[in-house]
Figure 1 (spheres, one colour):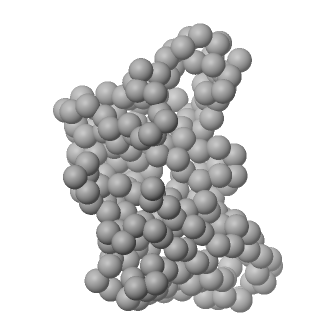
Figure 2: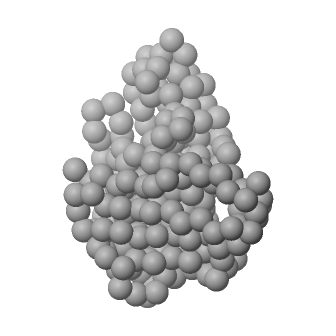
Figure 3: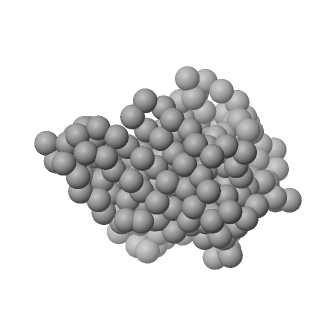
Length: 114
Length: 114
């Protein structure tokens, strides 16, 4: 079945450094790739997304890249701050006969040390 | 905009009883609502997808007679856990979408079955 793998499971960086989280997906029909941030005890929040017709998208300190051929996509956070500490989930979505289906990665717990 | 509420935020019930969880989109019409289950430090596991006015589509391994889903209006979906058992204890989280693609998550419901 469809699968999304996410690495690393835990990432610890020093404040100001960059953080990179990588995901791979198995379903070549996937065409929408959102990233969610979930702080402790709170709901997941969409932080950035990318569609399959785009290779890169940036929003301030956050950027996402997509390699459709390799079925890889990555989240890049630059100049990390303590408030970036959270769990980040990648996801891959596609529309099939049953509707729109989203598969989530296992999550990456990011710690930003002040 | 795009606010989703969920009620109750936490519930404790006795084994064998049923529990209803409500998911509401407060400022938009959600043609599709998704129900997830999240175990501690794990990812979001999709349980079912519900479209307004039609039967929910359940993921493999999710018992539709145990997890009853109703999506009677464009702003409300309910999940009823019937004859709850301790193994049903978990964090249940809904999301709502107006286009099946972008999902806005509710704050979640923590269920504890004694």
